[in-house]
Length: 268
Ligand SMILES: Nc1ncnc2c1ncn2[C@@H]1O[C@H](COP(=O)(O)OP(=O)(O)OP(=O)(O)O)[C@@H](O)[C@H]1O
Ligand SMILES: [Mg+2]
Image (cartoon, rainbow, N blue to C red):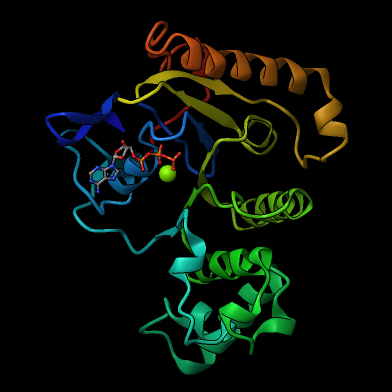
């Protein structure tokens, strides 16, 4: 994103001069206070809504419509599944223009990846919250996207399910070599899963800092979270977020392109 600003009305500025980059294959997490404009930012990235100024570039190009190589898991996932379609047909929904045989194969693979093969013939209302979320995830990855946008995907599930979903998503994203953009409130989750974390200010959202997370992969819920580097990074991100809550807009020096980001390349 380059200098993106967006307002819903003159009295509701939401994004203010947002600039950050995502390298191909990078797992980027965005953290920021509730209501600061994270979902609005994803709407701009996915071309569901144009920015008022600035530009969103995918590989150097502006998209006027949601590009076919991008998938979104929405914040309110239980409203995004079709209750009248089985899990299998929900997952197949995005695969238009693909032969019947290929569609069946890809759906089975996606269901396998999220461990839902056994529930393929159930309907969304017959699933637990975690299973519904896995169904939404399967529907997103079945199209073999290059960029996956996740808007608070684990917000409504219990702590253990959340951990299982974090491991599953990291594994899928790594195996499929996806560029992933995860919006989350959870600082531990952001640092644990991502290659870099973008911290946003209170509304209107500005980039406070983009921090590289150079923790080795594969990551493990116990050993990674006990690594002193994980604790240092978590402390740093937590401090920035807390400063935002206490002193909104005090330290918003956009460091997205600073020396901490030497690995960033051309991307979103
Ligand atoms: N369609 C809309 N029309 C007018 N205002 C909107 C619209 N969508 C969002 N807003 C306002 O824009 C601001 C940012 O909303 P947004 O949903 O982007 O925040 P968020 O960071 O995703 O919040 P949360 O963490 O609670 O999901 C809020 O003040 C919200 O009321
Ligand atoms: Mg939101």
